Every structure is written in structure tokens, then in C-alpha cells.
Length: 293
Image (cartoon, rainbow, N blue to C red; front, side):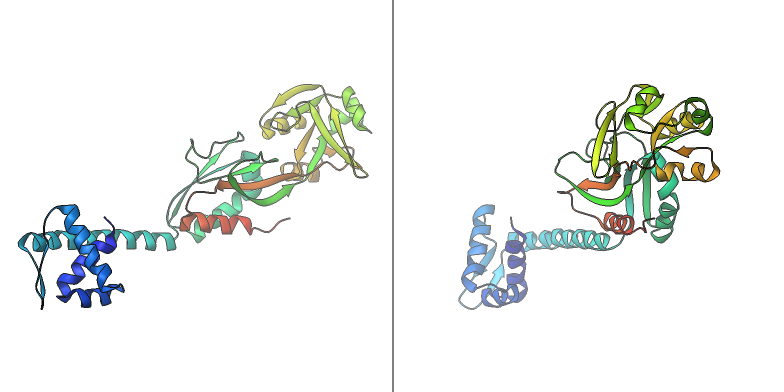
């Protein structure tokens, strides 16, 4: 039954007339009368005794109104609690994020978020894999790379600059590649989450060359490739945020700097059909307005 019908029944008992109840509910007297007729028909009993001068509840109607008031009160309290919660950032928020980007870039901002919103219980799941929003019960995930077409909503956070790097020891032993084709003569460390299996994109003068490489090592974790490059095992593509300290210290050196590699977009992804809680709105607003380097 619609709550409007039930509230109209209560209004009739409170006001003692159909006309007064109709005014209170903002409906016509005929609609008010129809509501009660339909209600009595649905319940299979008479709820009101009508005379030309007054309306009063039957014994069963009086008992029904007593229980109905309590039910409506509880429903109103529940609705109000949800409204308050939706306007106040609190509760559990489960976010998936890539390991390296979170530790190198997001970590201080995440700390600030938890300080600004102490009533939000943030659960951060660090994983370089492609987490499933629905089956893994995430409210949102941060993804690095081009997104596949889907019904998910995406907000772009940043674009990671990609560098070709190697250790000084590797360069001293194997030389410096000058052109994309030279990579066929080098030990390449390949990130398997990149699109285009076994090819590295190289851009110069507006032209992108998808250079095929023959990896001596591959992994789906950029930190593992980072460690391998530091040890002198080969050349690899890594985000600038992951190797900035190494470049400053000279433990890694950039290669083929005249080739600019296409940047990799970073998005916050979340379901479009899901009502956004105050906690989720706070996180989206916070993370999408971070300063970019």
C-alpha cells in the first residue's frame, strides 16, 4: 500500500472529517474518499463509521490506526537516518589502487584524507591487477592505463609520463639504444599489463612507432621491473613518478630522450548506477582535485 493512502487514513481520524483531512494532505475530497474506500476493500473490513456530520474509526479501525502510527513513525525515523547519513561523510569506504602509484604519489594525500574525514573508515586495497568492482565489493578503484568500454563511470586523475630507463652499469656494458629498432639488441624488461603484448610505443615528430621487443623478463608488477632495472638486468619502461628519485641519484638513467612515450592515463572508476554516499562523494571530490606535478 502507498504510504500516502495510510497517512490519509490517519489524517481522517485526527481531523474528524474527509474535507479537513483532504486539506491537510493537499488532495481533493473525492481522492481522499477513494483512498479510504480502496483501503477498506483491500483489507476486507470497514475502518470508519461515516455519518452526515462526522467520521469516526470502528473498533478495528482504531486498533489499525494505533499500529499504523507506530509503523509510520519507525519508517520516518529510518528515512531521516538515511538522509542524515547521506549528508554526513561516515562509514566504510573500500577503494582499490595500484601499489606503486599509491606509495609514490597518493600516500601523503591519503593520509590527509583520513585526517580531514576521521569518521570515514577507509579500506585501501593495493593491487596492480584489474580488480572487479562488483564481485570484490569495491566502491571505486584507481586504474592506470587505457580503459575498456564499459558502463562504469571514470574521472581522470592524472597522466603518468613514461620513461625508458636502465642502470649506468647496464649502459656501460651494453651501450645506449639510439632508435626503437635498437631495442631488439637489448635485454628488455616488459610490463605485462601494458596493452599490445610485446610492443613498446615510441613517439617522435607526431609519429608513434610500436616497436616489437623480445623480453628477457616480464612481470605484472612495476616495482619488480624497477628492482630488475636497478640491478642492471636490462632496459624497461617505467612511470616517471616511480623512478624520479633514482634519476636524481643517478642509479637509473633515461634513454632515447628524443622519443616521447605516450603518457598513461590514471582514472578513478566507480559504478554509474550506484547511489553515491556522502563518504564516496567526499573521496571523489578530494581525489579529483589533487594538485598535479
